[in-house]
Amino acid sequence: MGWFAVARTLPLLLLVAQLATGGPPPHRILVDTDIDTDDLFAILYLLKHDRAEFDVKVTTTARFLVFSDIRSVREDVNNVVPVNCVFSQAITISANSWTDAGHAVNQLYDLLYMMGRDDIAVGVGGEGGISNDGRIYPHVGGYFPIIDQGMSTIGECRYRQSIPQGSGGRLDINANYGVRREILPQGNRSYSPIQQPTTQQVMIDTISAGPTNVFLVGTHTNFALFLMSNPHLKKNVKHIYIMGGGVRSQNPTGCCPKNDTSCVPRQCGDHGNMFTTYTKNPYAEFNIYGDPFGAYQVFHSGIPITLVPLDATNTIPITESFFKAFEEQQSTYEAQYSFQSLKIARDTWFDDQFYTSYFMWDSFMSGVALSIMRNGQKPNGDNDFAEMEVMNITVVTSNEPYGVHDGSNPFFDGHASPKFDLLKGGVHSGHVQTGFNDSFCVLKGSTKGKCQDGYTKEVQGPDSVAVLVAVKAKPNRNVKSPLDREFFYHFLEIAVEM
Image 1 (cartoon, rainbow, N blue to C red):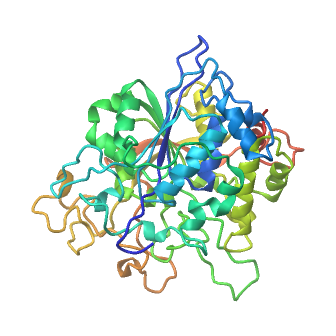
Image 2: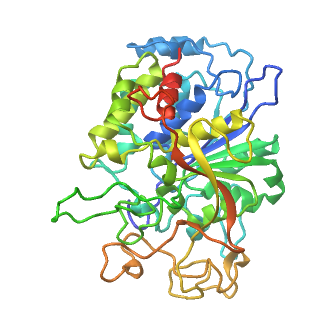
Image 3: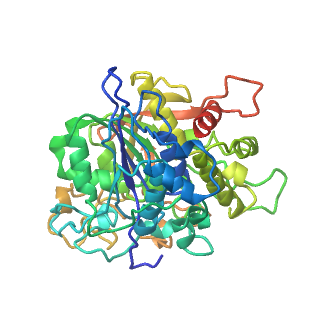
């Protein structure tokens, strides 16, 4: 990724509703995601929940078989007859994360076609922008983090620089290392930015329709822009579930073996997981770092929030036992696609520590969220998969000292009045990290940096927000099982369900 070009990338929105069976009102869910491998697991996990609770209902014979001939998938999917479902799903595109939008949308189209869900609309970012005086125009595309979003789709990518690329560049993730074309059936839909609805319009339509739970498993740009532009619709957002950040977390990766005096620790013990830029910022996690100001707007929106941060996901790594169990359970087409995606992630991992470095991020958040909802969304977050605790949190958007004007902060630099009427000398007015080579962030005499942009920091006082936080994955209730986490068992049960 260059310094001055933005590829249109994907957070996406997937609206799910509970199966209408004459019982309680359906749970409406809006998912915002960046379509990396763990996001695919989360989406398929949601789509498989068709047990009269959540309409991620897929009523197609195609998904219940193992196919060697893609043509048979197309024929079966085309003959699907939906049964007793609420079809109000939609997917929309924003920008600034792991994958480029056109590729990600096409992969998503194919995945939805495989699951018999061509009824789900897919939208593209939009051509609106944000003016220098802070006016947010309709259909703002969100192709940049809010701090850099202007009226153009060309500009700097201060945060996206830190997202790693494979040997094939961003195309590796765009194509899911070839797994998409090898396995997924291809339907009739393809990326068409002119004809597709915009992100913001789909959000407005979706949330206007009724109380909605929002799942955020990517950067927060899309949803933050929605909240800033449509404060009258906040009342329709029932709850926000977030995978991101690290509060009290201690990164278990990048640590040195015992008695190895020649080893230099990397991100070992850090709050964050930014292995590409921990020498400048050891506090941030990728999802929140992608747009710290956007995340701040979401956390401080006044809407109830449940956070599944690195504190919890660090306790549920993809173990070798889970990997082998998944490999042995390939009875559904979507299980095959999920496993092959996981396998290529393992086979292309940057070191030999995959089983201690790759975690169940977004899928775990989805499991915790659905379990909380299933149990009545109690204030204590009662659920089957994670231990919970209430913490007072904020999102760091700039670094002290506040009130500086060093050219790093477009909210203040060059403006007589700060953009969005932000407070002069306030928490947003300090130095903002300009990229992974920002010299301001170097801490002399240390291999770790000092910048905290994107840190979900535990604080007290008026800038803190009470958040329900997952702190640890629960162990498997079956102590004799080789799968040591309860969610492992549940995930595989859902993934291979016929």
